[in-house]
Length: 159
Ligand SMILES: Cc1cc2nc3c(=O)[nH]c(=O)nc-3n(C[C@H](O)[C@H](O)[C@H](O)COP(=O)(O)O)c2cc1C
Image (tube, rainbow, N blue to C red; front, side, top):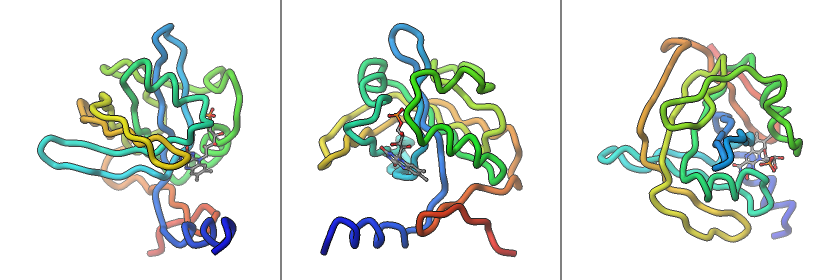
């Protein structure tokens, strides 16, 4: 199996898309587009995120011990693309509020899941963060269409 075969195989796992945000200890917001995000535990409520060791958002999450999973809606592709590129000032043109946890909550999100880091593990070329959920906000209601990702492309729910 080549790295390209493995990357292609990973693409057959259909997922949602989120922008995981944090606030560094100096107050600066950071974030990146992510789909390596999953629920972990119901009681206590926990999520897991897997962040590339080369991500500029990694150290800010480690330092602050907090993050927010901003689950994206179908119409937020431009935002998703913007947060999937390196840029020292990603938040300059972005509308957001500070959540109770201290992490940025992006305007137009389907859902915001605010977490405090309860464990960190090495995982190959990524870090695995286990987060305990403190707040969930769903400002767009239950029926807002989600952004999906499948085989390297954005997709929509059929039907
Ligand atoms: C749909 C999609 C999903 C992604 N999922 C992840 C992920 O789960 N973890 C990760 O570290 N990078 C992921 N990336 C790549 C990062 O968004 C990209 O490397 C980004 O430039 C990192 O930004 P930063 O260095 O400013 O943190 C994904 C990109 C896309 C388009």
